[in-house]
Image (cartoon, rainbow, N blue to C red; front, top):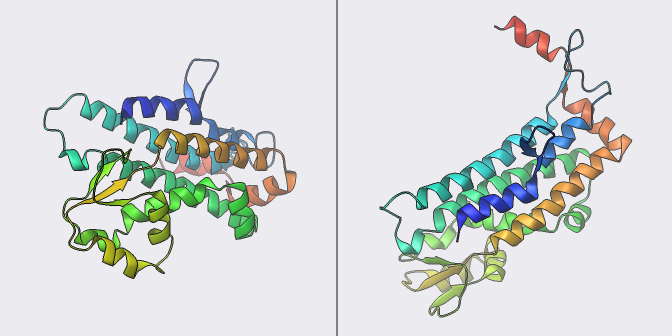
Length: 242
């Protein structure tokens, strides 16, 4: 995987360039959504600050900077990681940040009282991200394998191959833990086929833009979210602490 290319893709899909040529996470539009309202006045004397766009932007920067850093690393060092793990490290970090964003978006959905069915219908990529994040966070019986290999294509691969449908089956819940145990325990030929990361980022872009539209285009949603994400006299209090 070319992680420098992936970083460029993330920047293209999840960032925008402003009039000054600087690029910012598209999710910053959530911050702009409250401009001119009672939920945002970043000048004295009111000094109200809405934190929503800032926090989502922070997670999005984490996604980009982590991917950029790995791309720089693999292009500049000689002691590359073992071949079977060279994609494990960056992909696990990628899904950490994507899952953090999914958690944050899910929190918004909970505040707006979206049902699980509605959330899954609006944001199907969340489930893909969640199961892969679970795979890296909660390895289950994978700790009993001998040097599993991580690839992006199963072509010319032999052994116990775990595809994305298997990851969903074993890591969405605990119902099939025994089956996973029987498949991978004490095996030395386990191959995990990683998903198309460019595709996942593009699918996440769709979810990202849909969340922005939900807040920008719905006054009721803006009111509900704004009340819970606005700090009165933010800048006054900040000055008093210095």
